[in-house]
Image 1 (cartoon, rainbow, N blue to C red):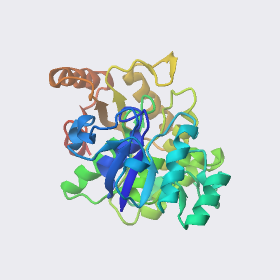
Image 2 (cartoon, rainbow, N blue to C red):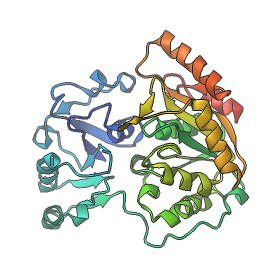
Image 3 (cartoon, rainbow, N blue to C red):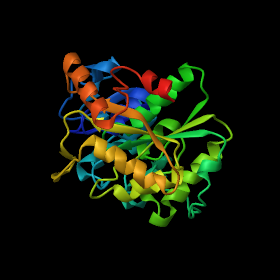
Image 4 (cartoon, helix red, strand yellow):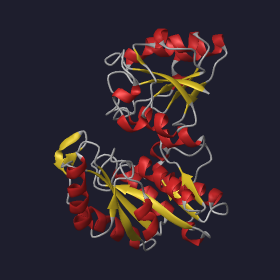
Length: 336
């Protein structure tokens, strides 16, 4: 499928959905929409992607595409009205629109009317199933090992680490499956439940349902984590995933140099070792788990500084750590 990705004024650093789709989705991305960077290419911004995909000002400048993907996941999941002309233009060109926002496109009167007129689909990824219920507490009984990525904060690379772990496992002949819990992971996998939009009582049940659906098909399941247990806004969804998944192993994700909570800078991040211990302790009363290792985002560092940061992170969490993009997840797979 040919897609254009909307990432106005956020690409690449604050457009993690856009980068995730570019890096992992099985789509032909024909353009990225970012009015601030028009005239460049994706490779000018994300070195490891090595793609000549153009960055253009708007839909009118993009090659033909089948779907417009909203590639931004702002705090609160709202819709920026400056995106409206491009969404409108995409629908009028006969393209579907895919969004992982809390703002649902199908509830927007203008978009719903235009979509009906032009025979296109508005796909709201963050709309969970209607029949969710509470967890039964049975994930640990499944005949597979469960690995959960957790974070010191939001936007620390949990989805990236999850996908890199799955890829590394498969390269080593292990039968591993991906359990997506967020909008970007669901776009990439084509299925999943957006746990941050479930009723609070049903969050653990949503994760358990996905594990039960996949447990007989794989020897290992790697669950995409969300938020952080020490986040002032997102800790509830993090705890729901932790207890619903009943993981055998945890991988703690962190961004090198980050000292405060993203978007809540008045809150300092605890030492990563302290955060790791909190996760293990919190999980333990439901299902004992262990810290398999750490994943560190060193994208803002030089090679030598990245090596030093990884060594420091390993010492802090007392476990092996990798940058799964700069290196790969092989060392963590050896631990597994």
